[in-house]
Amino acid sequence: MIRKLFHILSVLFMAAIVLSACAQPTLTPVPALTEAPVQTEAVAPTDAPAETEATAPTEAPAMTEEPMQEPAGGMMLPEVDPASVSGNIVIAGSSTVYPLTEAMADRFKSDGFAGEITIDSIGTGGGFERFCKTGETDISNASRPIKEEEAANCTAIGRTATEFRVGTDALAVVVNSENDFLTDLTLEELAKIFSNEVTQWSEVRPEWPAEDILRFSPGTDSGTFDYFVEAVMLPIYGEDKAEEAILTAENIQLSEDDNVLVQGVEGSPYAIGYFGFAYFNENQGALTALSINGVTPNEQTAESGEYPLARPLFIYSDPSIMQDKPQVAAFINYYLSYVNDEILDVGYFPASTKALDAAKQAWMEAVGQ
Image 1 (tube, rainbow, N blue to C red):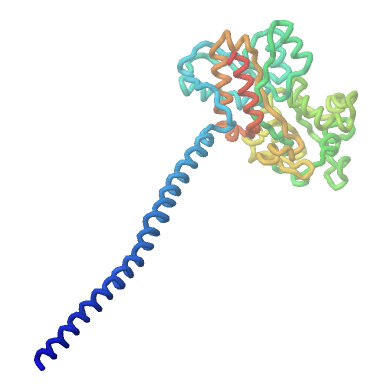
Image 2: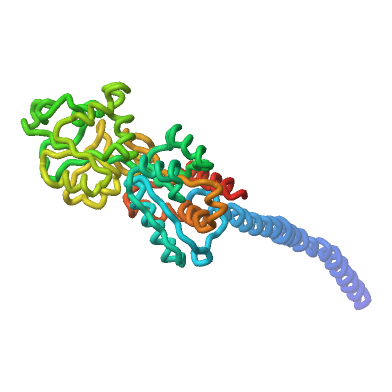
């Protein structure tokens, strides 16, 4: 009996061992199968993309941002130290460009240039006379491109007139701030007002006062006068009579000094004048700038060409002068590099990037670089 019981217990014990041995292999792989996929997804798929994405986006912007560090105008000229050059610089020409060149000369001197810079405001034509005929100046300010006969005069004395675009002007047509009847003109009305065709405001529009028109215009040596004749008078009166129409108008005062014109318009509510935007900008309290064909002169309309009396501004020099007189080359370089820092404060507007880059390229060629 005891032996039988012992035999039964032995069988049960062996069965338990067998069952335990069979169960162990089944339970052990389950955690292994579950953990393996988790480990694989955490290490391989997750870590690899994380490293790739962290590296690529960080490097790309660094390469993109580098060109954006260049100054306005895009192209960079060799750096100039004004304190490292000396000598005199003689400039004459446009009364319109005068305040911009004066501002650049003041900045050039404040940055260390110890030489003398002389600037005369005598009109674009007068400036080309000194630059191309008598050879007295190193730089010529101009509110219009050089004429063929002027360039020929330069050639005759061994000079090559080299053009540098420095900005944009919106020619301001202005009246006294007390004028209460005039805010906008068409180009046709503007031509009529400055012609010998009418003498009183009411002859232009019947609702305007029967008062004499007091006209103030830049003189015939001024590039502003040339521009006004070409842009305003010529389309109405033709090439033969455009200049005559304005020069024979009653009650007209001509002057190459824009400050004289400003004072004239300030003197009467029936006066009208035109000159560079910078001179209006300095006298906004006493003057009102008119819109032309419904467009107001400002930076946006001047740059886009929407304002019908927007025009380019220039300085001119000569390669041989720039090579013989390093101070002249240095000043023009400095002018082109920093003009956009000053031009809005003076009262004009920046030239396009393309135009300014073309001027910088002209400088490089003029100095043989």
